[in-house]
Length: 449
Image 1 (cartoon, rainbow, N blue to C red):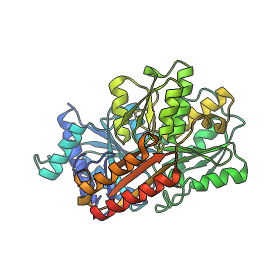
Image 2: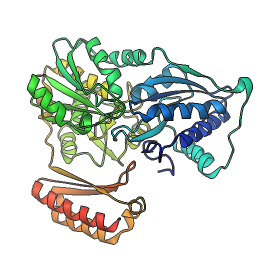
Image 3: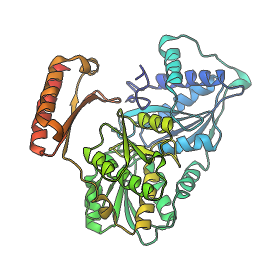
Image 4: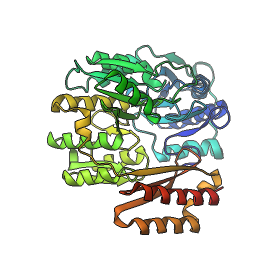
């Protein structure tokens, strides 16, 4: 993990950690690196989610880019995967998303994509970091006609919607769908997309005011959508996060269908259609043991990576696999996208439902999910980096693993984006893993202050 860019870009509290000054410096350093690798004036597009701080940061970033000679296209509010798609579609040298994804409104972040639509390589991120933090080189100051210009995009949302709609195998007439847009980026796309595909849909939490993004709604608060689907008799519901790169679902009973179950459904279907490249699904170590058992039972190889969709994608690209993702709902369908895309994932699940004639509840019932507890323990920034060396924590983990034996597992890791240590346990005995999880979490809290 870099000093400025974590596993998912630079992220922190807007105006104190992610400041206008920092955004401008990132813009200047990025433009310098791009200019050194191109023989022409670099072009960069910028998208945002609905946070109030988005304008402040996006225009500061654009100012930094222009000051070193790059031209900027402002997309406005779009999903993160729209930036990844449009940077390729429009032939730009880089794309930047201003978003803190599923985090509360006071956070924001800066995530950079290269011209291919993939996240910026580690080496290029490190080069940008060195320019900003170590001042190894000073970005040039251009004047006159060399200064970059800012243009406002006219058709970004429509072009992205048409791309996602093109991945549907058929229309979805007769399907009643509820959509929770988390008062975020999906608010400008989801209703149009799914109605264009023929579905009868109702959208909730699609009235962003700059502060209500992810506020008791969206994929981090699925209970709102669950209650809505049950009360109004929808066939299913989809919940996105603030920048719409995640998807969670609920069936007609309001029961959660998480990323693990969605990946299992898709992998089994693709295998049946002889489209599961390498006969492999890529998941992270945080996925439920139930997903791994399902894959074994259905003759599907499940490769496991470190936590973070960038590591899933790296494995997919390295070995030529076409589907992978995380329990949280980041699902990558590499045939159609270079990053996780909640709305694209929803369309693929609807394709499967329509083709098989099975409800989401029927499809999801084939996967047995083991009881799982997850404790998010707040720690100091310094403490987070001492996790791997602390002997008391190691002993607590070893004791829990010994008690669980082969019937469960323990995973303790530092968050890549927040000052948290995540303590996860799985097993068949929910009371047991809850007790063991509390014990480990308490020791982590005490030791990593």
